[in-house]
Length: 534
Ligand code: B12
Ligand code: SF4
Image (cartoon, rainbow, N blue to C red; front, side, top):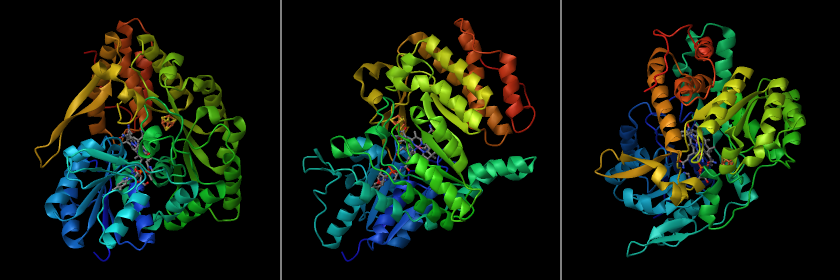
């Protein structure tokens, strides 16, 4: 083979739109940049951004391109759809060498071979293994034994060949190679603007606020987060691929500025840069203050537009008044915090007990400084009591009213690779759903919920979920995109009668409903909102 060409397919979510894939898939774009820099013809196929059904668009791409290697990116949430595309690749181009990579492939290589038509699975970061594969095919060598892959021997037994994580310099070079100028951010913005019905918003201020939210570009400057939360899979991703504990690596302040300038040049319409790092500032962080000073200076000298804003996700125990103030000055308008729960007991179960004492002071400081905190919450853990759930609901409502944004999830989702998903004691409390791969006879049982082990708590959480969904459906049909704060108020509303039955008072029903109405895009829904108690 002279020069293999590579088609990379991003994770596919047919229900995408406002809530899921809001941006081009960073992982495969970074890989494409690295391969192209090495002289390999590479193209990204993004199934979430097609003008026609992605299955048809993919077939067309496969027939026109003569792709010798096709890479399929996988996540747990999208696996059944990713597999559907992989099977199309095998049917249309039986001779192509098909590789699976990404989160789910790394944690479940044996499942990939079982369900998909793959020749090879890449474990962890795809840069080195893909370059090695291309070089071998170029040289006419067999593709076996590549470091950072899993393959099957002739008896079908899985063989894993671990790879060490990218070093700081390798990571920097890979991030620098990301071809932002080719990434179709404006196509995503157009779709989101119509989903939010921006043109129909009543005031210029409201339109501007939404545009700042939508016209964003994502930048990742860190390889992984070492916090080790028990429900998180990302924290274990590089360890899984390396077979041992991987080192943390990230860009320095001046390298972040270089990337910001490149993004601005590639997408002059961008209003916000979202630092997509799992955590942006560490407790003993030496980057955050120089970076903020650098951004202020770059804005003053015209290297970065003065209106450019930033969003990042942060460790709450790494935030001080000095840091929050510096971030505000640099243009950070939203700071995300993985609070997860307000009960110290549940936080201990999530392996993040140390954050509890920082919640109140840091959120208050951020609000005082004029930065909006965005809190991610998980209402229940496997060992939650009803009092824990009540405490989180009450605190969530209090912080919402003080001006925080909140994203709420009812229970732990057992993502492959997370400590809780591996705990055999939780298996009896784990719900599975049968997943079907369209166009094939293939199906499997995927874990989807870890419910509280206390049956009363589990039942209350499931009833809240049903009530939430019953209220959400009609609202979504009537209004445009419902942002997280509205969905969180709906969660709180749906919990009130159920928690009241268990003698837990959360808030006044009419007051919560009034808060919800006040935040709806139009004044009142067609029919009054009522929480189902079934
Ligand atoms: C950015 C991000 C998003 C963004 C944008 C996604 C996008 N379009 O890029 C948004 C906000 C939209 C998003 C949404 C969601 N996300 Co998200 N997200 C992330 C995050 C923080 C970073 C992903 C990223 O860009 N990484 C950087 C790139 C460079 O790494 P990468 O994608 O892993 O790619 C590398 C390797 O995996 C590999 N690779 C990847 N693909 C391929 C393909 C081939 C062929 C090869 C060889 C290699 C390879 O090589 C790449 C380069 O080294 C991750 C956490 C994390 N640290 O990864 C969570 C994460 C992926 N998200 C997650 C979740 C749960 C969600 C949501 C469901 C959240 C929610 N509850 O609503 C939604 C829904 C997504 C969906 N429909 O499935 C989970 C997925 C868990 C799982 N095991 O499936 C993660 C892992 C966080 C976590 N642990 O909980 N997310
Ligand atoms: S802080 Fe976030 S990314 Fe880090 S381990 Fe916890 S959940 Fe995962």
